[in-house]
Length: 481
Image 1 (tube, helix red, strand yellow):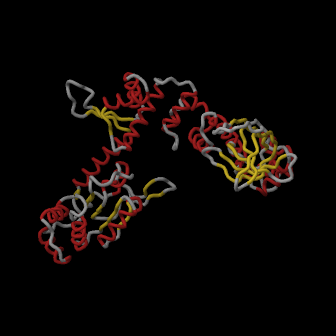
Image 2 (image 1 turned 180 degrees about the horizontal axis):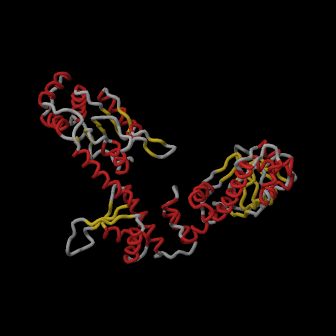
Image 3 (image 1 turned 120 degrees about the horizontal axis):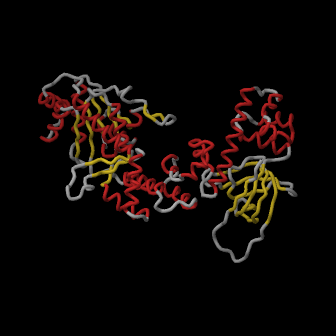
């Protein structure tokens, strides 16, 4: 087994140099460990001590049973007492039968639990890890282990070895164990070589790693400021940042200027990066009305997903508008008069106009500030459509907004995610164009809070024969996604 060696340097100043101590021991228990930072609190059985020692510091994916050689200093925590603070360490697989059993039974290798670990070690003793590493087939001599479990153990052993090697590589660039697992799942055994070829892929491919982290790795690996990989990734990052400020696209000249400033490169370098990103399909450059004097002025740059959703929204809305309604035509004036009598109210002229439009049009936007009568309009529309026998759905982007809508209308409202039957495990919506919502009228409140991606997914689930009404105040709340 290869050894692992890492260093850490604490912050702060002291008036005296602390005594450096070296300890050797076996991890007995992991009290706490952070997959992201590696910070760990563990109980370690140290040579020459009767009781276990509490050690604290950054350890790479520690495993009970693992042997540690530690360099550090003794400290005293006001609550937890004496602790050994690690500054450097090296780790190795355990050599004693007890250590090997604890190591294998920790959950490190899929297919081996505490009971199976005890059986394996009883059979092979100190040769156990060599058997797993070099001659896995011999595990069939252990009770309860057949070919299927051997295959599972072999695969899990190889994977954990690759992940630990990757953790070593990543630790040098400030990335923790949690990132290592994600990177390994994405790239497999080629993870380290892919990162060396183009670390900026991490910013696109791996959740939780952005351009700034990838750029730090790229700099350590020797990538120049104007390298195509860096500039292309920087442009994607800049467009993403701008999208969080509400920009679905950004004018090409402004993007070139902002990109050059952010990345510290020439405008020509940014242009090449934009062309590369467009060629790879990561961004879309769309030409709008163009000024003959400034040919680039009429071009907008989209992240590909936003361009896809934006054009998709346009097509879906057109499909809804062009499709026939699910109910018969009615006399809107008579319907409004009937609803006013039922609710004992009198609508203002603009309110009545909005209700009339809901009966005549397929899509409608009702906007206005607080106290302008939007809720009254919705209540009248619900009253009329309910009388017509139309199935009604009410929704809002947040639980709070949905609750307010329910209280104001007396009609049940859901969050958009709940209405679309979001599945967090699969990361998608059950309701879509193949499994549309069952409604003839959909009213969505606080529509200004809906971002482009969620609007696209919602419209995919709206039946084309349905009426769609979006309600909100454009000056009130930004999108929440």
